[in-house]
Image 1 (tube, rainbow, N blue to C red):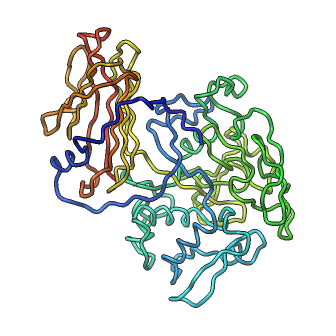
Image 2 (spheres, rainbow, N blue to C red):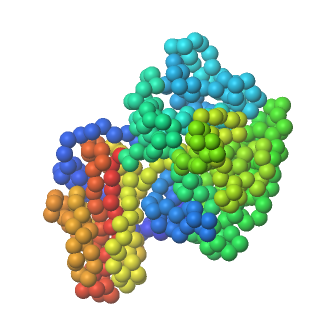
Length: 454
């Protein structure tokens, strides 16, 4: 899948003689167990401009699932927490009793077990209401535990479900969550890489989530639900995929092959997808959340970027044409404060959830070649005037200031793992200062990053 990151094959890679994670732990305090789960696709270009409808601007990098959640994924969840299905995570009427649902249940309360139907393991799960999707995110946030549906498994974590449905909000430290309307929209339509993404005059946004302003081709399928006419602008909509005795049905995730600019599959068609953004319901007693993307049974127009096609879905209602995909933050927020040098503003990017033992990469690019860059780390922000710019981390509180070579590529990559035991909600700050005669006072500076542990 495309990442569209700066190439740094010749970058200075810093694994030794020092270990970044070890230095972090030398500075920080007692442990709180954290969890990490899975790899999702990175959505970069933080702080992008919104589309003309006001949607799609997201301030920080995040990751979102490559595919819609499948029946196989959801079965794993059910077998972990629904031996006694207190909150009705399993919907027999849709998941079992229709030819579009893909899950079977056996046993009795206290010993329920679940399995996928033949040919349905790789199809998107349907029959999940918003609260089911939120509980799945809580389960991921809590480290995929096994047990009853309780605060430590499904009822709290990313979302506190003890409050009224309309009052549920994403927790500030949520590790996994449903994308917001803006996050979903950006992943589907935004494209900072292709000058053709003008959506009829809108900079950087396509009309359809297939990297196209042209109406997508309708998908067809074989008898196992695989798309038989895949292509770069194909989607499963308006009952073109007939199989399993149904006029129109879900298809194997990714089998249409069309992607958004970020490499994500099925953001148009297959099933509508929940977001965690509260909508304004017609009936104030029926709280709703936005859904996006269109589905196998409805017109392909619903896949378009118009706000008209943001569906206002009852949070407590499930349907055979609604599913979801999960997202998470990078762990880093961009604080700005770059100071231009020879090649403009040096760029510092961070990639990690900052969960215990999660992979961590800090990448500097666009710096002057063959010079010294000082990597500055602190656990508080100084925001001090320095060399004509702003030194954001405080290297004395405690922190450190380490010289590193930029090499022939003008880039540096620090690769390590985030240490266990860092307290939840702990902030850390990062920036590079680069010796550069074209910068003010002989220095350029990267943007600063703030990392916050989940």
